[in-house]
Length: 186
Image (cartoon, rainbow, N blue to C red):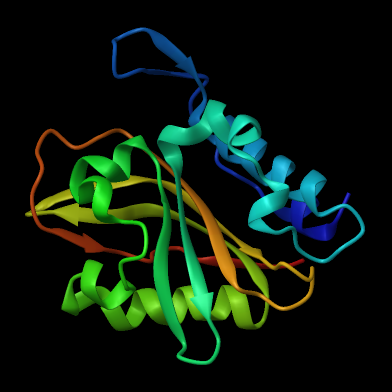
């Protein structure tokens, strides 16, 4: 097991949490650990896996928490690649192919771009906890991981992320927050 997986300490504050249907679910952090483990297994002996190494049937149990971006090193732009069920509620079916600057609010664009760029260019795995974003004045708390992807296994060109939070009671303008960020060498 890599230092990343050994050192990635996802919160296990609660044994169970209410699901969206009111039934107890397993600890949310378990889903993020599972996504990190799938990423690790998919890369094999390479530094990073590619999108093709993580087919939908492998990721499907965690689809509601997933999101992802493709990175173009020539233009230094990120475009939407994957929007899980929760993200789709805000962005609809138009996320794929949309540039980050056209999707993320201006007030959080630079911080979001720097965060994602660090993941693909260093490359590093990232984890954050606490406030993930705000909807109007409502702070949405939880945990987020972001993992680099590369077709050649070496040169970062995408980010697979998973966010775990209780859905906010409303939809509206979103501001992304990068709080309590931890970086892990891969």
